[in-house]
Image 1 (tube, rainbow over the protein chains, first blue to last red):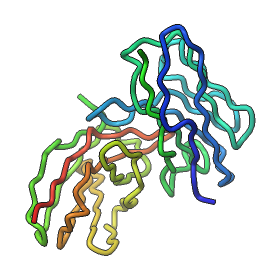
Image 2 (image 1 turned 180 degrees about the horizontal axis):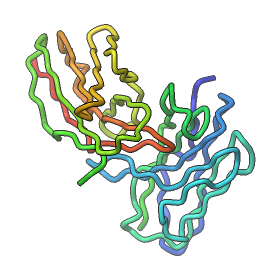
Image 3 (image 1 turned 30 degrees about the vertical axis):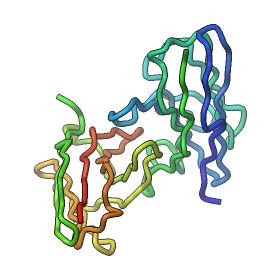
Image 4 (image 1 turned 60 degrees about the vertical axis):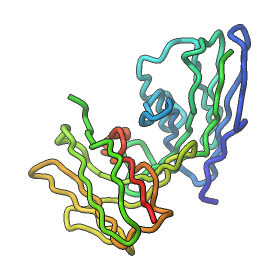
Amino acid sequence: DTEVTQTPKHLVMGMTNKKSLKCEQHMGHRAMYWYKQKAKKPPELMFVYSYEKLSINESVPSRFSPECPNSSLLNLHLHALQPEDSALYLCASSQGQGQVTYGYTFGSGTRLTVV
Amino acid sequence: RKEVEQDPGPFNVPEGATVAFNCTYSNSASQSFFWYRQDCRKEPKLLMSVYSSGNEDGRFTAQLNRASQYISLLIRDSKLSDSATYLCVAAGNKLTFGGGTRVLVKP
């Protein structure tokens, strides 16, 4: 299994809603990442988890709350988002943070629209 | 200055031609380098790793020049299916993406 699975693929939410994005990998990777990608821009790092602990928070607003319940799962909890938060949210994993010999594996993303 | 910089293109390439483009990086501590390919509204997919010795994968050749801090990608015998955005990536404890180079292969 060499996949990173993200659900849902598409999400439309209101500014007062609470929703969660989910990411799962079964490659035994110990580092997992959340990226945000706006149209025609490269992915921007949001969070890094290493061995289930938050390692990097790239000054992301608190309306985004990551969670790593176990080594295979990564969630991103969303609350009180703004329309400008609409983007493609990508999850990725690697053997370990800093262990990127084989690059990262990306999920297919969740396309989020905030209305 | 951005950490990883790329010519955004687009590079308009006749089918069957060769195209090459570079990427420069500013963090000399970057350990590994990659080219990712991203199709419209899809996730980035690893195309190949980049080594100082240069490496080739079929029609694709990548090269790393640490002294000048640039990475190159060459595509030979371009196919219509090569049309995509190519993302240059520098890796340390996280991946840093360039802005991408758009390649359009035309019949």
